[in-house]
Structures are given as structure tokens and as C-alpha cells.
Amino acid sequence: MSNFLKEVGQPLVYRIINPFINLLLRAGITPNAVTTIGFLINIVATIVFIAGGGEPRTDLRYVGWGGAIILFGGLFDMIDGRLARVGKMESKFGALYDSVLDRYSELVMFLGICYYLVAQDYFLSSLFAFIAMIGSVMVSYVRARAEGLGIECKGGLMQRPERILLIGISAVLCGLLADYTGQFKYTIPGTSFPIFENITLFTFPIFILAILTNWTAIQRLRESKIALDKLENK
Image (tube, rainbow, N blue to C red; front, top):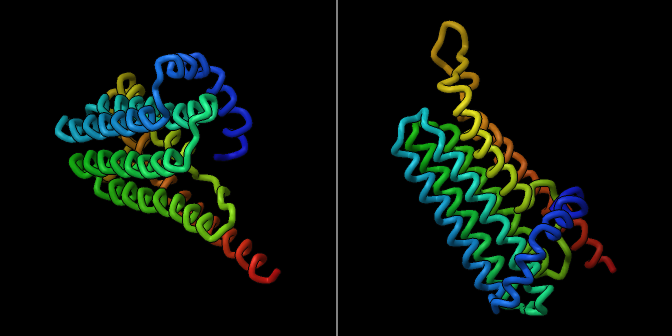
């Protein structure tokens, strides 16, 4: 998580969700149960994207709802860790379970997005979504492998919270603004090739994500090499 999100965003979210955390503690809900619920919510988001793939290209409501559900599911990713710490229910298996379901959640989410973009004939955007999925997996894998070798590896710009926020917010904006702009499309003069249309509010951030996730993975790899070199030269 970036320093800004960690120092500003995280405390703000914690203040909002703390009453809900206390309610879960009184109800006896475990962090693993919360993690599972978050995963199921991401499956719902995927179903929404898949359903939207069969609708007219100009109907972006499914993109908006899919993004809102992704953001809602992202809250549970914060709730489970907070619940484990506040309720003193932290465990090694819980950390493993959380990491595994986070990966499943993200892959399922990208499945829905890729399906939607392919179904709506946005082939290039679907390719970038797939590349973003690869980068997202590699960001997490480099960290896990580095920590398995005994070094800390948490740096980089496009970590999971940033990825969820970028995809979720862009999808919500895409769905909302489409209601006001209608079937907006700006093409290269004299051609039918679009430069900007409503879906661009969603697909351009995916393009950015495809670049930055893989760059983050490379950054982590380089930082890990430096840290490992220092360990070996001690």
C-alpha cells in the first residue's frame, strides 16, 4: 500500500468500519469468514460483468454496478485483517487463507472484466486487462517469494489496494457518466476509429494498470536482488 493510502486513507477507513468490527466481534464472526464473504462478493461482481457482456454496447450500467461491487468487496479485505488484530484472532493459517483468497478474488474479477470486453468486441482492451492480471499476480508472487527467502518486499506503486481502487472507481464513473453523456463517441475525423468513448473511462485505467502492475513487479524484483546481495555479502 502506498504511503498516502497507508497514512491517510487507512486510518480514515478504520474509523468508519470500527463500529462494524465491534459488531462482528460480538456476533462471533471470524476473520476467515469475512475473507470468504469478500471472495463471494467478487464472484458476484464477475457475474455482473458477464451478464453485461450480453447487453447492448451502449449499456454501461453493468460496468458501473460491477465496479461498485468490487469496491464493496475490497472493504472486506480490510475488515478481515482489522478484525483479526482487534479480536486477537491472528494466525498463520489465517494469513495464508487471506492471501490465497485475495489472489482468487482478483483473478475472478479479471475473468469477468476480460469476458465483458471480449463479448463487447473491445479486443485490445481485453488484452490489456489480461496483461494487468499477469502483473497483479506477479506483484504478489515476487513479494511472497522474497519473503520466503527471508527479506521484506512491500514496495511499489500498484499494490492490491491501489489496483482495487483504480478498477472500482473507474468502472463506477464509467457507469454513472454514461447516463449523462449518452452514446458519446469521438472518432478520428474521416474515419470510424474512436479516440474516446464512454467505455474509455474504464478501459484507459486498465491500460495504465497493465503497465504499472508489471513495473511494480519489476521494481520489487530489483529491490529484492539488492536486499539478497546485502545478505549474501555479510
